[in-house]
Length: 428
Image 1 (tube, helix red, strand yellow):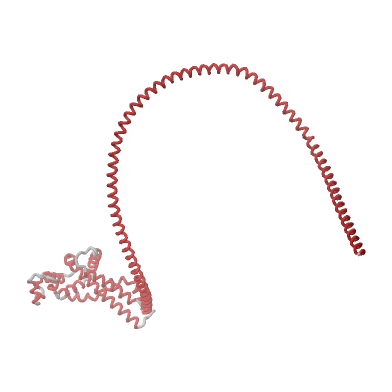
Image 2 (cartoon, helix red, strand yellow; image 1 turned 120 degrees about the vertical axis):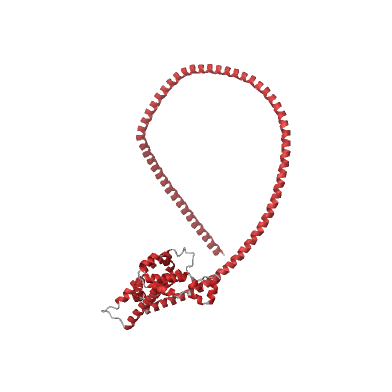
């Protein structure tokens, strides 16, 4: 009883410690609220009440989370007898051992008061519903009253969470714990949110809903167009598949015809090869006969060519000897002619030098002669120009005189005609 009373006395401090450890995650958000409730900055009663209720809800959630962790860790804590005996008091250890034995042996359970459960146990059904024991609540109360178990529980929970994805057994407890922790975070976030922030969030949510509705409408329109395009695509694909089947049939038919034609060509080629071999044999016999004849003809021609070659060699020797005699004669004659050529070359060079001297003299004379001739030609040209101008003036004067004479003659003729006309009029 003393131990129980001591455990009972420790429970409030345990709750406060659990709230402090579990609420360490929200220290950043709670620090702002704590600054608002200092002596220098006194808050309104409503804000103070809200802060108290938020702390109360947080403590309740932390206690529920820790009890859930403790319940999940019970199977592992049962195996840690040394750890429990080093932390728990002897009286509490005896109570735990008694409760474990009751839970392990369902025949001593209080569920035997239920006759239906008794029949199930006799039939071999030792499920959880037939292991209900009110002493489990007392067990949770005892283990919750020891703060030193918290690090052990947290360590076991971290190991369970680390291998959560690899667990093959029932993981509903871990999922419930994760959901409860997530609910705590959401609850703290909701309590830290002001009315203005919540209103802004609602407005943003409405805007997002409106945009979502518009996007859903566009998605519907796009889905309709996509369905129509799919229908057209399916129709085109059906037409193409039909066309492919038709072409495959035609291809099979053409392959069949090609096989028939190929076999026919093979037979024809075999026949042609047989005929060609026969004709080749005949030709080979003919060619053998022709070979014998041509070989005889070749030998006869070879003999004739050898005789002719001997004659040609004799002629060649005769021509070469004659050519050598001619060359010797040419060398002798060319020696004499070379002397004459050298004499003529010397004479030519002398005459050429004389011509060059004469050309130089003529060039010197041309320097004086050409200007004189140009001057004479200019004078001649001027003289002829003057004569030409004089001739043109005289010719023009003659033309003018002749024209004036004709004019005078025409005037005189007109006067005569006028005089004759007047005399005729007088006579009349």
